[in-house]
Image (cartoon, rainbow, N blue to C red):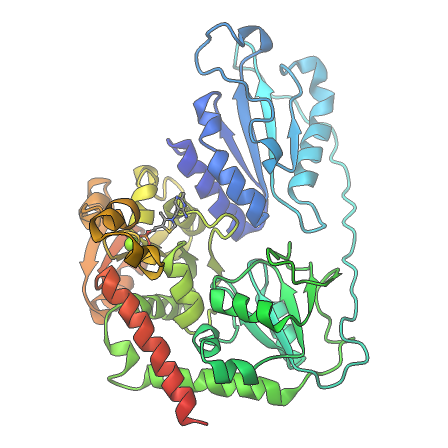
Length: 498
Ligand SMILES: Cc1ncc(C[n+]2csc(CCOP(=O)(O)OP(=O)(O)O)c2C)c(N)n1
Ligand SMILES: [Mg+2]
């Protein structure tokens, strides 16, 4: 049990707990605006398929519409974003025999085995007195977990080039299993063990042409890479979606076949090993450049920051939580393969609640977070309770580029005059985030280079509590240039190996 003052942060903290434990987490709030605060977390849980049980207290019917405090219409408050809604009326002892069934229905909908798990809502009205003696619950019902069906996707095809795109929901076992069939697996920031640097590689026309597969397999959510999505669109290839990693996101409607379960190495023919070699050699040449002394890794920027944080998480086996905006992209595009459990709120991709989700993942354990400065400020109320009574260790690294760096990559950056752009898109805020952390009673440090970042992570991870590590990275304009330079460097590497 965790206690949070701000319901919005509580919701996102609960998401973090549910992500780590892979079990439904109950969020209990009072009525009125308290219930409304959970809207954002319900949206995220809905689209990220995270099971949460939202339990809102309510006034009895006779106190609605008469000006009673903290009273709003909570019937279906979250609309279609919940998998199931129950409004059983005022709780009465006489109805106690129905409570287990009620809870079971909510649990079943939240944990739906067909891959559409998500949030459910129980609106529970009470009359005074609000304190009572708990009853024993009726016997537990037995569950009927149906096994997931398996299918052969590529029966009859020999040595085809298979590109597997694995997003949110995919496990490291699924990745390994796909690789065992000679499939090239590209993953989002949360995927473990997938092939790094694919985004930069696919920006090169010649490489992209040679890397065109015969078949695309999709697992789970979308990747952040627009370049990959654009290639998939223009290739227009046979695309098979497996639902075993959860909902297969497909806004471009390019998945033509939908299969149940996960790809099965026992029934699939081996794919083309040469195709794997093409990708892994290209990826390895980028890695070799990045590791060469004096190149890539020497400079302190948002990319090397992301690389260092991912390496720190991998070396120590500490869970990683990545914020939306540039962190999720820099990790997906430029970090070495993830090895420790990695999480992100990829359902709605909000920048809200990420501090709390990181704290939820770290609770009673250890985690590293990597988020933007606006993302930190957006959920600054997550600092109020920090890790709370359950304790734990959280090193929250903030890439401080004074504003929303992602917008500098958009056409708006040059179309809108600089002052307006800063006001409406850049939204720089000049709070000293280390001092903000300290003001809430946490550790707050600032780093300006890789070595001090590594040292700060060492200290943060060997102490308990929350440490906010503010990384002062180059300007947002410089960040765009750095990304261009790095992409160009990859083109040069590919050119030199041709
Ligand atoms: C709740 C919410 N509001 C607004 C947005 C739109 N948005 C996407 S990225 C971003 C800026 C984030 O800035 P920062 O956290 O500093 O990350 P950076 O872009 O610098 O990497 C905003 C406002 C969003 N995703 N979620
Ligand atoms: Mg920023």
